[in-house]
Length: 199
Length: 199
Image (cartoon, rainbow over all chains, first blue to last red):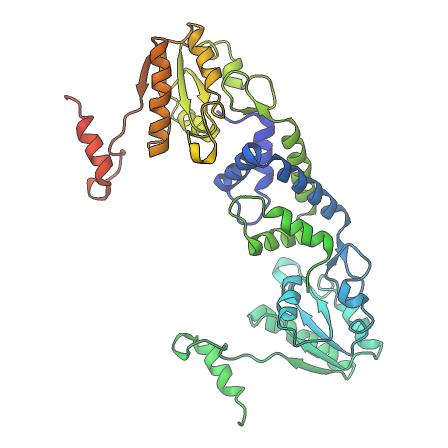
């Protein structure tokens, strides 16, 4: 036995969301049908609109429904000579929450992963190269994740930037503030020693 | 800093789903925007349609977009003299998956919970009473959950059924098959002793 066709289709459709299996999808569908009809209808509207209208910022590739995102569109930051390269829009939010960076961003929307068919074109590196070629860029801060793929992507971009004689930096890796040495993995600890600074 | 207004609204809207907090909602929104535009658009369509069209079966109150659900509409089961009372449509699926029950259902869509404003009217007990009053019902099997609220609801419905001189039964409680006595809670174990049967 199954539910009615439309309820079944709703449960199946909800499974496109990450981390949602058959049981969670069923629970979501029932909660929406039982108690949250108006929220559900609102979600449907917003979702349809977002899937249709949200595109990428022409300058930094983050998600936006405008031509340029709020940072690239601002006169103060949009012409900054420092570009911070991150993997995802969520990383932009993480760096912004610190409030210490006042340049602009470039969002790769992923990292180099040849096996998954993600190459330089998918990461929009031609657009980044245009920024570098324009001569407006002074420093490129590579803030990709400290993973094997993130590091490889950072090196690849570093090689491109070297051609345009732009200063390239990589964010520091080491023991996080508030962490305890005892619980830090050995690679991070090794990096914190090689990257040590004189007091 | 925030995301663009539409992306922010999408993240907020996704939070109406049960078990979805700010981080999960963000992850869902980005996954849909990055890789699953067509699934997202399909989800939006299905969701809008389901919120608009799915109602309750006129006979058993389960979710359906038709007047009657497939069980109530079937000539074989829809006129069965045995009604099984369950709390949710998911419970119907659980009982059906066993394949041992061939009667019809009555779905309460909840349990008595006066503090949350859920009384007999919210559970559609007037509709159940109509079924009982019609004289077509021979046995009422109470399969509400074995919780305090589920038991209270079962007793309440049992009292109503007694007025119409319908046979009322409650599903058996005891040690689940495949379970080990060592790990079964004491209340269940006590019930399994009081409900013992001669071999």
